[in-house]
Length: 477
Image 1 (tube, rainbow, N blue to C red):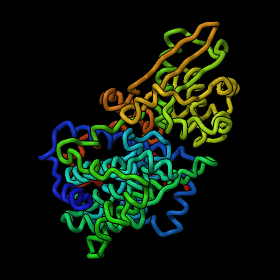
Image 2 (image 1 turned 90 degrees about the horizontal axis):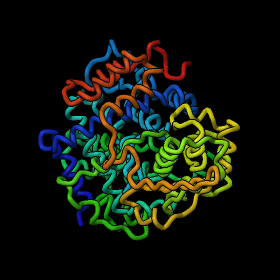
Image 3 (image 1 turned 180 degrees about the vertical axis):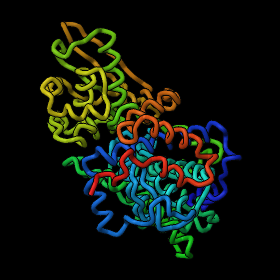
Image 4 (image 1 turned 30 degrees about the vertical axis):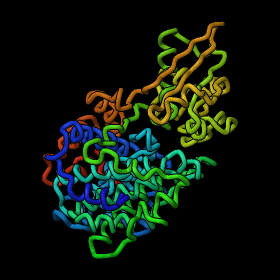
C-alpha cells in the first residue's frame, strides 16, 4: 500500500476551489482558534521567557522590522503577538510551541492529537518565505491536517500512546512537512522525499506527565520546525527515505506494534479529517471536557454549592484515565499549570466551585475551596464511557450532595464536530485570549483578517496586525 505516495500526491494537488466550501470555512475557524492561543501564550505561559531566550541564543531571532520587509524575504517571519521578526525556523518553532502552551488548541479525537499546532505554524512560516497568498497557505494547512490525522489513525493512536509517544508531535512532523511542501509547490515526489526526511525527526514523549515538564509544548513546536526543515531540504534536492510511512522501518511499523495502514487512505479526498477536529472551550486536556460540561450543567441545574458536595466520581475511558486520572495521588495534588491541565479532579473542582473553567482558573491551583473539592473527586474507568471511545471523548459525572445523587453523562462534549462552536463563540474565545494583549479593537481586526485569509495577497499582513499595543518582544528583554 503506497501510503506515502498517495498522501504526497494529495497534498501536492490540493486547491481551495476543488474543496467543499464547509472544509474551507472550518479551516479558517481552526486557524483563528490557534492564533488566539499563540497571542495569549506569548504573554502568559510560564515557559515563554525561556523559549524566547533560547531562540535568541540560537540565532533564530532577528531580521528586518515589518516596515522594512520585502515580500518573500526569507530572513523575516512573524510570531503572533510579537513585534520582533524571526528566522523561518524560529517562527515555526515559536508559533508551534506557543500554540500548544495553553493546552487550549484543537483536538482530533480518533487520532488523540492536536493537528493545528504543528501544521499551521509551519505553513505560515513557509508562506512568508515564499511570499505566498493566503489561499495557497490555507490549502496547505488543509493538506497538513489530513496527513497528520490520517497517519495517527493508521498507527492507531491508542497503541502509539501505550508506547509513551506524543502523537501531536510525532504525527505532526509529517503533516507539517506536507503543508510546507504544498506552500512551496513541490510535486508529489518531492513531498514524499520531505516525508522521508521528517521520519528522521519524528519525536515526542509523554514523560512530561511525570513532573509537569514544558517539553510537551516544545516538542510540538519542534514538529513544526521539523516539517519546515524537511520540506526545505526536499525543495533543494535533498533525498529523503522512500516509503517513510509504510516501509519496513518506516513510521507505522517502528512506532506502533500493530498498525492499520489502510486507515491512512480511506476516503482520501472525499472525507476530511479536518471536519472531525474539535475546538476546545476549556484550556485543559480534552479528556476532562465532558466532565467539565457535566459538572457545569449539574451545578447550574441543581444550584450546587461547594460546601454541600460530599463526593464526585468522574467516569473515563482507559486513555482518559492515563492522562487525567492516574496516578490518583498525583492528579489530586496539582502543583503547576501542566499538572492542572492533566488533572481531572482539578478541572472538575474548579468548574463546581466557580461555574467556569478558563485560562485564569489556573490562578486557583492553591485556592482552599478548590483544594478541598479536589479531595472529593475520584476518577475511575467506566466501561460505558470506554464503549464510546474513540468515536467520542465522553465522560460521566456522579455527584453526591446534600444527601442526593446527581448523574450526567456527556457523550459529545462542547466543541466537538457534532457540537461545534459557532462563529460568535469562536470569536468570543479569541477575544478572551487576545484582547488582553492587543486591545479589543486590534484583536477584532486581527480576527477579521484571519477569517478572510483566503483573500489575502500575502500572509505577512496577519503578523503585522498582531503586534501588541506596545511594540516590545513577547516577554520583554
